[in-house]
Image 1 (cartoon, protein in one colour):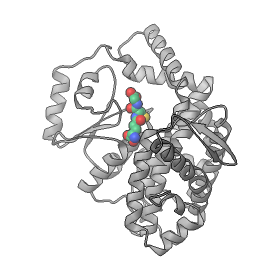
Image 2 (spheres, protein in one colour; image 1 turned 60 degrees about the horizontal axis):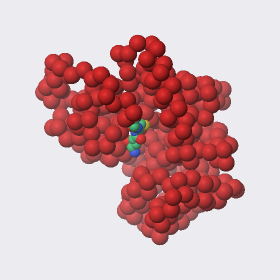
Image 3 (tube, rainbow, N blue to C red; image 1 turned 180 degrees about the vertical axis):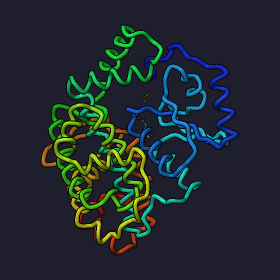
Image 4 (cartoon, rainbow, N blue to C red; image 1 turned 135 degrees about the vertical axis):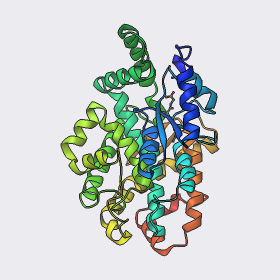
Length: 357
Ligand SMILES: N[C@@H](CCC(=O)N[C@@H](CS)C(=O)NCC(=O)O)C(=O)O
């Protein structure tokens, strides 16, 4: 989007009109994009909670409006009825959850609640490697995503201009896969992690409509945003549709989520959820997170760490160190829970959640 500024913008009575109406009707404006996993995560959350909102596809038509509100050039961006502006999907959901507590997205049991927060973070950060890598690794996915992005961002240009824009988006994004750690060295491991994680999710979702039982939890929104987006891209779509019918049903369910029952007890969830924690979170995501945070603390330009039996090299991801610190604060509040200790210990997650990890 940044590269496309200077594009035609359309402001006027319409936009002013809906803004006034929005305030009067208590409507939240959600600026987002269908191809932004974090945006659809927030939209799915608003739909589930019944929060009055208007989904505004960020495009050349509203760029000026967006920029006026945005502190960061990122979607999602939520303008609340009182004018408060929220950015960053995890804090956005936390802020809205405080104002709209029912139905809660947090299971009551401390162990389930923390595992849900951990999986939300896993979805945002590690699930994003799956999604972003697949979107920009192969020609078919690159072409598909670039064309859809160009159409959404620049709805008013003619077809040849749109194609030129799509080509420039493709070039820019393909050159950025390193940003999430995708490289020739790591590509096979990212794809294996997606296949393995999907197989575990499939087993779990064969018994539950949502990750924590009969209603969506924080984890569903984080993980779903990434997997839903992957499903819109040709290569991961084929993988999902070929191997994971229950996950596919969950992807569709989460577009307009509703409560179908209560949260399940941790004892019921554990047999099929613990393997995901062990294999993907304890073995890959958290060791990667710790190495990333260490590299940032040491102001390194690049870090190399053993991961999944081989070395993994990438530039550190700044945002992630902050969200890991926030997760550690959440952990501090519940770490005395004996079941949680056991679960995190047995999945080899515990040692990464202490302050000095
Ligand atoms: N941590 C942020 C990440 C937001 C983010 O990276 N948004 C991307 C789209 S998924 C973005 O807006 N990129 C710049 C652009 O599209 O112009 C969140 O959870 O909201």
